[in-house]
Image 1 (cartoon, one colour):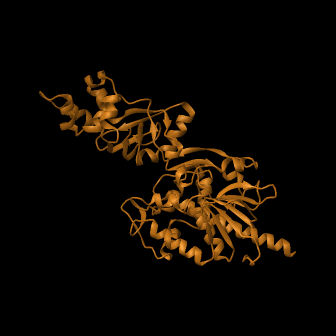
Image 2: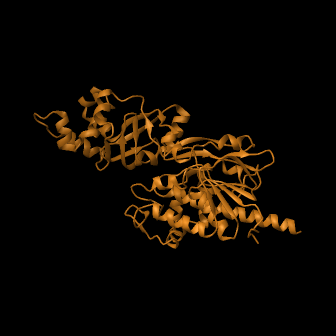
Image 3: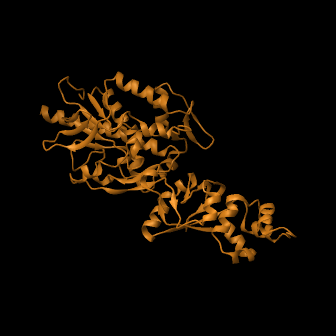
Length: 417
């Protein structure tokens, strides 16, 4: 019932990332004529970048914990993941002839750890099912008559579409296509938007001292914990940068840190430099006689505290703290670090904000624009790294594709009545 006749307009997908490609697959497998347009020279560019160093496609943790990773949008994402969760995503990948495995952290990877073979197999299947992919073609919005405006090297063309799926990404990594340029195009059509903000991002301090910056910028801080006020500490590692901090542990906490900065102008987190030791153990080790050793040597030999961790302790405390063992032990276990702003959006791994779920129906169709659907990072949700971002992009693309099929079916039924 949803199959296209040769003369019927296509369904148009704008954006060739995982969400757009998944929507195209759902439609093509149902016999719908699909044309996909992407502004970049090739599709899946951010997907390929995510695979550099190991393609973490999803995560194998329990579904309830998995859904909880989406924070305030766990309800909406849980609905999308109900029919296409991590296990179903793995099965879909296996159907492309790509095996996967679960790493020690629960993260799921293709066996060769690469994104390119998966993308090649996927594009081959899409083309075999008739999906036409146009690259170097930028969407410019709608003509007055409702047709889509698409600009390429040969100028602008107007495309009549049976339905449209917008999967243009968020606002991070503009050089890979996610530039947020779609925002004014939707705003002028009355679609409400949540401002785009960095997610899974680094943060800046007011200023490191020149000595600390010169010595430690780029240094990894391993076996550390970070705690926000009122929350349990989180163990991991991060990197000191010339401007502040970044890395997996910081990214995992980026949403609450960012929101604290939005609310108060800054956010103070506490670093536990020796999470494997209790405060009492740290104090006892500091009490040990050090003889002729300097305090720096004592910290290194008694507590194993040296390098960048010792540098942070010096940088973030005053001289008086080092003359008081109780205060020094407290600082080692809860060293305050004040962060004043996020790094720029274009540096972030992903973005928060975009089209709120309140602006779409359960099939991801914009209520302001019937027949226009949104998927992927265009929607207002965020998640930590670890496969959660990609899984939600795949699931939302699939949901948008199914939404288009339902929309087309309804339109055909209305015409036949």
